[in-house]
Length: 325
Ligand SMILES: NC(=O)C1=CN([C@@H]2O[C@H](COP(=O)(O)OP(=O)(O)OC[C@H]3O[C@@H](n4cnc5c(N)ncnc54)[C@H](OP(=O)(O)O)[C@@H]3O)[C@@H](O)[C@H]2O)C=CC1
Ligand SMILES: C[C@H]1O[C@H](OP(=O)(O)OP(=O)(O)OC[C@H]2O[C@@H](n3cnc4c(=O)[nH]c(N)nc43)[C@H](O)[C@@H]2O)[C@@H](O)[C@@H](O)C1=O
Image 1 (cartoon, rainbow, N blue to C red):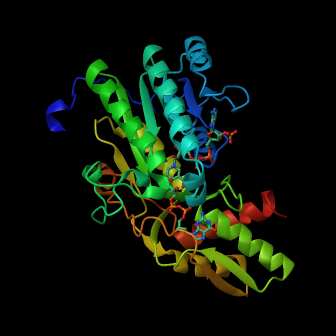
Image 2: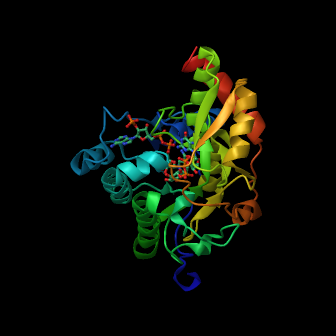
C-alpha cells in the first residue's frame, strides 16, 4: 500500500478550531452519543446532528441536500445498521444494503461539499474468520469471512476501500477506524437483535428481578471476544481525527479478550444474578476468536483506560437508571 500512499493529502488540526462544524452521523446510537459527549468535553460548540427521522441517510438526494446546505467541515460516520450475531444472520439484505447506502451517500457528499476530513467506522468483523491473532491491519482480504456477518463485513470493507479510493484519486483526508466489540451507555438492549453484552445484562437483570433460577446463554461459551468501552472508543476517535492521516485503516481495541463464558460469569456477578447458566448450543458461536492488534494506534500514542469490570459496573448503573428501573 506504501507506493499509493498519499503524502500530498492535506491534514488540518482538528482540535485547533472548536467552532468548526462537525457532523456526527448516528449521534443517538451507542457510538455516536459517546462521540458527541467527548466532543462537548473538548469544547466543540458547532456540532451538526440529525436524527434518523430528520434525515434518512439511505436517501441520496436528501443527504446531498443536507451537505450542500450545512457544509460540515468534519464528518464522523457512526450511523449504520448494527446488530449482534442473530440480527446479522437474519437480515443480510439490510446489513449489506443499508450500510452501503449510508456510507456511500455520506462519504461522497462530504467530499463534494468540501469537508476537510472524514472518519469512517468499520468493525473487527472485516477480517477473515481464521485470521492470525492478534489480527494486524494487513490481514484484511486474506481469507474467507465469518458467514454470520459477511454481508455487514462486505459493506464495511467497501467503506474502507471508498475512503482509500477518495484519498488516492482526490487527495482527500478520509480515514477509517476499526473498533472491536463495543459496549456502554445507550447500547441496544434488544433481547434477540443486540450484541452479547447488552443481551446478557438485560437477561440477567430481568431474571434477578423476577426471581428466575436459570438464564439461557447462546452457543458453547468458548468463543473469545475483545471488548472496549465506548468512552474509550470516543476518545480514540478524537485522537485519530487529530493525529492520523493515512491510507490504511487503524484497529481500535482493548487488547484484552475473554471467553463468552467468562463474560457471562462476570456479568452475573455485576448484575447480582444468583441462578444458573444454561448453554443453548443450537445458537451459532460465530468467529472463534477476534483479538485485534492495535499496536499501530498505540504507537501513535493512544491506549484505552477502562477495564471490562469497571465498564460493566458503569454500564449496569446506566441501564438500571435509564432502561429498566
Ligand atoms: N456496537 C458495536 O459493538 C460496534 C460498532 N461499530 C461501529 O460503530 C458504528 C456505530 O454503531 P453503534 O453505535 O453500535 O450502533 P447503533 O445502532 O447504536 O447506532 C447507529 C445509529 O445510526 C442511526 N441510523 C441507522 N440507520 C440510519 C439511517 N438510515 N438514517 C439515519 N440514521 C441512521 C441509528 O438511528 P436509529 O436507531 O434511529 O435508526 C443510530 O442512531 C457503526 O458503524 C458500527 O459498525 C464497530 C464495532 C463494534
Ligand atoms: C461487533 C460484532 O458483533 C457481531 O459479532 P459477534 O462478536 O459474534 O457478536 P455477538 O455479540 O452477537 O455475539 C458474540 C458471541 O456471544 C454469544 N452469545 C451468547 N449469548 C448471546 C446473546 O444472548 N446474544 C448475542 N447477541 N450473542 C450471544 C454469541 O453466540 C457469540 O458467540 C457481528 O454481528 C459483527 O457484525 C460485529 O461487528
